[in-house]
Length: 358
Image (cartoon, rainbow, N blue to C red):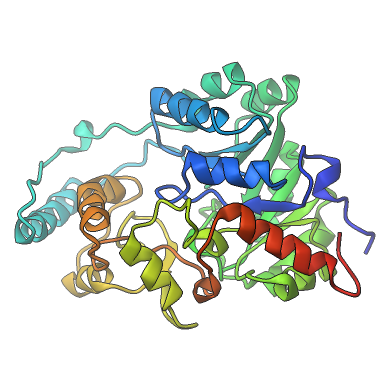
């Protein structure tokens, strides 16, 4: 296998390390801290309005003059929902909201407003974002062309070799190979096959052999040893999420951070309970109650919208049974401290290795 092209050759960064975009956890402070330290900070804006997207980009720019990535959700937002299943889930959620003294607003299928990446592209173009990453699907060819014409580098997310090949054919500059160990939502987007659940160590070399663009490893990475291992399997860079979950700049609540730091290797599971889309997080009471209800979980983003106020309440009051505790299988290896220190300590450990990878 030929040596992979380093991310530092195609991206405006010093180190081939990307901070994973974690919606609800990643803050402009986190993105800026990573960018200022030489990595690639990633600002998640999936599902947000164009106005909120612009506000977050400008808030990040106010904290750094370094380039950073903006991450989009590229799923279709017009998925149908069964009205009877919607009513049944809302009946059940109304009771749960009442337990916590929270109001619950019932909605019909036409009452949901979902923003998609097409609503946000104009903002990214006007803000001249140098790196655009995306997950849950692909970008339209016209959007790819418009972003590339202004010089943006594109990074797609794949959870299988087939997805990686499709992304490469569309003209992305790099592919994130997301192993099943990774925390948060699965980036899977092909609907004619079962959910890919391939571990990173099996997925990475197969993806690296299948595509000619640089491959970024994601899932279960937490120290110099694991990072070095994936470079040996063909990675051109790494994407770390749970590594930064307990950092000072993380938007996770105190209880969320404690749950992450105290999680064991078997503490996480894949669930659709919170959002309607498969995601890895620490098991908690809400997951268990949804499973016990026997109800059909609604598609993303209907389920996600209906649980939003409950999740926000859990964050505000440190109630871990109500928080979507997205975390990877190595989340307990997270550390407290400033993002800059966490990133540079990893870089230092890698460079002190007798056989440094960069």
